[in-house]
Structures are given as structure tokens and as C-alpha cells.
Image 1 (spheres, rainbow, N blue to C red):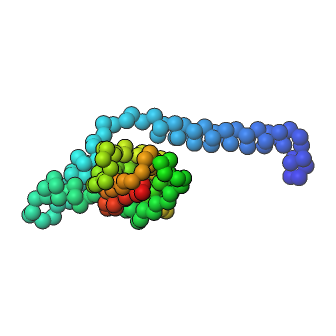
Image 2 (image 1 turned 45 degrees about the vertical axis):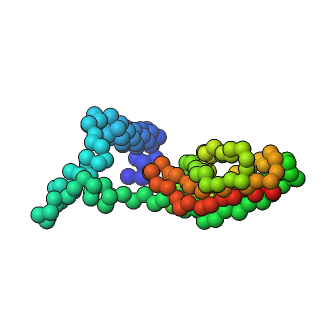
Image 3 (image 1 turned 60 degrees about the vertical axis):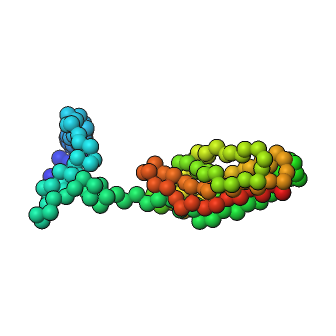
Length: 184
């Protein structure tokens, strides 16, 4: 029996059979993967319609679920939270710049906008500040981060106060925190 296994033709035949077996296994695996990827895509429902259908089929009480109750109970979005605001001044009036450092976190990581709501000013001319886009990564928002916003005094002898609010893509708003730029 050992003499037959040492025959070069038998070794070649065994190698060919092994290679063919590997090729067959690879082709079967490839076809299974391709077939599942090429299945026709069926029409999809909106998430609300799908969840409403689930809620209606699993309803065990005689109380009918309303659309508002279903939407409210399914919402898991967490609003952003402003943890604090620090200011620091650089330069000398009238060319002084004040930097507001807004410390916030968003456990969903989907904050996108800082909004400034005007409260009061001692300036004789109108003051305003445009909203700021948030480009901080989801990971940093979840961990907590600081946004630095500059305010250029361009004059002296006034203060300007705004309420700062952070908005996220889920429609949530953070707590309002007052911010005063003191250019005196």
C-alpha cells in the first residue's frame, strides 16, 4: 500500500482532487453570497408605518394606541446639554477679542448648530451674532467637548448678552445658558 502512495501519478491525482474540491467549495460560497446580495429589493415602509404596524399587531389591551402616544414612546433621542460657558479676553480695546468656550455634550452625537438668542445690550448700535455650525465629531460630542467662539468688540464701553442654545438633528434643543460679551 505504501508503494502506491509513493507513485508520482497518485500524488498528482490526489493534489488535483483536493484542488477541485477547494474550487467547488469556493464557488458554492461565492454563489450563496452573490445570490443573497442580488435578491430583489422589496418596497419598504417608513419607520413610523412599520412601528405602527408592529404596535397594532401586538396590541393586547382594548385601549387604542394613538399616533402621538406611539411616536412619543418610540422616541429615544437625548437633547444636547450645555455644561458651562467660560469667556476669556485677548488684546486691548478697541481691538479686543473675547472668546466664549462652550462646554457641551450630546449623548446622541448629532448636534449641528449653536443658536444665539439676543437678550440685551448696552450698545447704542445694534449688535448681533450669527448662528454657528458644529463640525465636531460624534465621538467628541458624546464624550463632551468645547466649542470656541470669537467675539470682536470693535469698540468699547458696551456689553451684549445672548442665550446660547445647541440644536441637534433629532429636533432637540439644549438648555439655555446666558453668555455676556463684556467689552468694557
